[in-house]
Image 1 (cartoon, rainbow, N blue to C red):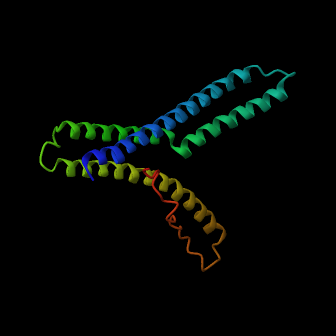
Image 2 (cartoon, rainbow, N blue to C red):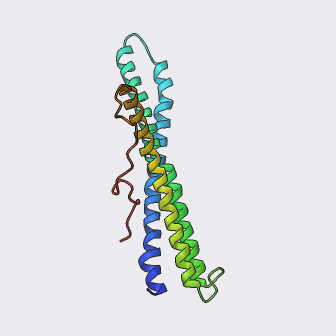
Image 3 (cartoon, helix red, strand yellow):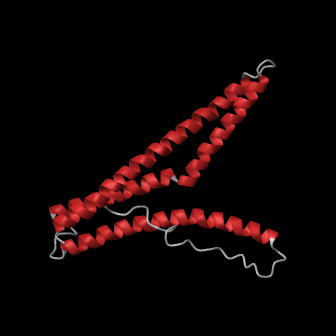
Length: 181
């Protein structure tokens, strides 16, 4: 594969993917944060408006508002929009930097083995991001499974065949966040 083909079919494709995903996660993170903050700030204001005539309906509204804030915070924790945003942005910027260093022949890409070194660095950067994504998402899965296993242990203490082992993710569950097109 020529350097031009590699740049176009692999590096630029990945940079575009990371940029798109970074923007999506940034938008989701900021939207949920702002919504959560606005609704949370409205709760004390609404509770100050409690009167005998509107107490029942306002209590329901306050309960829904509190639940909405909890939902927003849970979604932020579960989907890790902030972490994904920054990780994808970092990967895009790193690839872009290496692309320009290689294209201009600047160090460390000024020697005879510049293309090989560039491919190694670009692939290592992308692999590092995938590993980080897998760790982040495996931690969520492991924590969920650990909680399930602990609950099972508590209810199966008298079952001698129960080992409490946590199942490892299947091949499909641990896949990378994207496949290049």
